[in-house]
Length: 196
Ligand code: AP5
Ligand code: MG
Image (cartoon, rainbow, N blue to C red; front, side, top):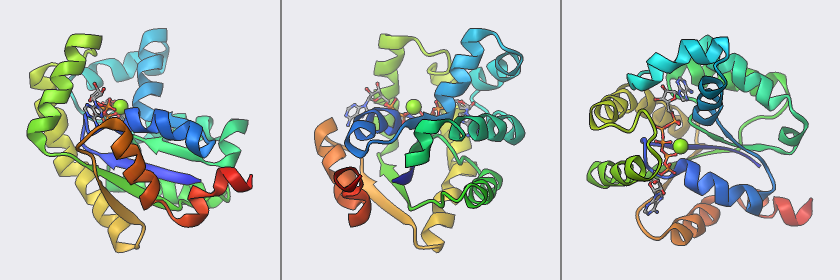
């Protein structure tokens, strides 16, 4: 199963990927989580990324692609992956397609979680209170939503054009949203674990 999860900040990509990884037997790969780990570790990459992330902007395409390529080379990704937070602009989309072609792991489907912006603001405020993520301040959230609309929405358009996009309603109980996602997957993907 090779799946990209798309959706605005706070739409539930990370939450759903954590549920689906067990169901589908593939790792959850989040470029945001990888970057936050690098920031926490204080690595040179993390030092470069920190201010950009706290401003709600995108870290440079080269840095993120190198990080993703390294993660996809790990043995657990041989069975597939749930990609969360990548690709985030059209250039990353092209880079991803080239990379997956090169490693013989073409993408099967891109699935976008659709959640209205008022609910997104509410969800992120809840997470800010619970976890204190540095980029969950109201000002940075506004910028992240702006960057999403400007740079990431066209990625969904690209996947729609090549017939690989499914849109799923992301409003409702967690388990209900998971059921909708699984129902939207192509049959061979739903059965991947059973057939493995
Ligand atoms: P990233 O970590 O990817 O953040 P994001 O896309 O802004 O998304 P979030 O993690 O905020 O939301 P989510 O959709 O995962 O929602 P979640 O499940 O947590 O990126 C962060 C930054 O890193 C970027 O701004 C950028 O700087 C950098 N970056 C990352 N990738 C990059 C890339 N490819 N290129 C360049 N830069 C990159 O849910 C949100 C909240 O809602 C949670 O509290 C959750 O419990 C709750 N919730 C979830 N589902 C439900 C539900 N059904 N009902 C009620 N509550 C729910
Ligand atoms: Mg996330």
